[in-house]
Image (tube, rainbow, N blue to C red; front, side, top):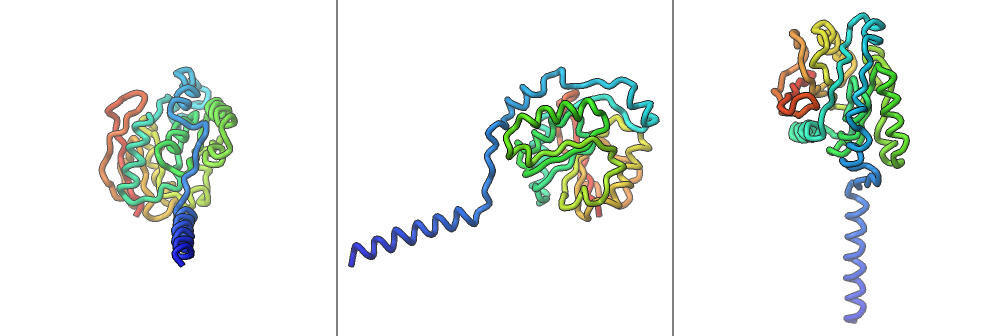
Length: 227
């Protein structure tokens, strides 16, 4: 009798442990993805200057000076997203450059990250980095050559966190971008940006966070919620 009881207890405990394992969300392990590896993949030479090539093509609508969010900056962004109870299933980076911030996003706690960029040289660099990563990482990061203003509503579906490094965008471009997004993003979506336009109609300003950038460790990101 005692032996049967112990077997039942052991079986019951094993069943509970198995059930907990199945029901809890499983975190993927990224065999290649570490901060040190990303830093190695993106040395200073990865800050690709494109000169006036794209300025002329896009009539100075964008600024192609280059800088990046550091890992600490992305970690601050992700922590704030969690504090605001935003889903961290996806980060969208509008103007993702060579894609470094997308890798940082995964390391910081986002499940997936995707971004678009106009400079072909930067996208090519990012895709070359990504192709050497493990399948888990490849499935979670997407880098695409595309104009922000060509994105349709489906691109933003299911995402509540957007990052824009727009500090040196012309004022009219910043205004156009925030107005454009109102027709594309879901209610409650939060935008972390380096600057905000003069007219924030449709958005609620939620303050700012310190987010170190490659050009300034004391940089801030402004937080705007689409109402």
